[in-house]
Image (tube, rainbow, N blue to C red; front, side, top):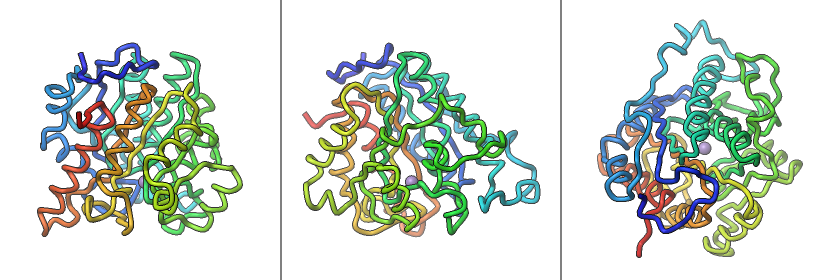
Length: 329
Ligand SMILES: [Mn+2]
């Protein structure tokens, strides 16, 4: 039994937790984010989820590196539509979609530890498909992040796919070729009306246009300053509606670098750890949560200040525990 008093209305086995640990960094250029899951697990996260929160852990505490899916060399994976490592990211996220699908299909809570945020192409696609099949509903996504991650390949300045997952998931970026994300079929898609952002503060011009054109609900740091985190989460949940399963995709860079310095693209003026934990606790309390991602913990950054890595890992563990039912009282 889990220690959480909240009944989950969409999971048939809510004491079961399916883990996917993804050591993948190909969606961006900095080494180290592939070591994120290992440091989270080494710090005792899975043990805490089992002994403190009472989950039966399924799947592996081994970190997947997917060597068999990666092109042999950089030359075998040339840029396509300006994207870097397109074959690698597409193949790995396709496999992640199968892994999350498998857990979610069995009515378990699904937790994915990243890895850079490109991996959410797989996690969201797999959970969306399983939830459609299992209970006939669309899944909503709460994307907590400093960035909007909704660039189309053509709009992206960097070509880094971790800035594009939501463009592919919503179908705003279209692609036919299977090996370049064409494998994302209709039943894996995210309806843009079921997407809500919290924490934005570094949004590209083309992304602002996409958010406006598609009427996508977004709460920036400005909104949090204005209304407070309590009201913002209430409005975000009201937008989704209380008849929809929720996938929470949490980029640790949503937190202020003061709390999470060890991440690839830190942006000042972010969430406090308390605000991050609050979002996670509130989403847990809805009883509608079916999947959680925690991404972009990079222990290679800020390594000269060991404190920075430890703080980031501690913050990441806290967010996950709150999303999975830890509460203060
Ligand atoms: Mn992100």
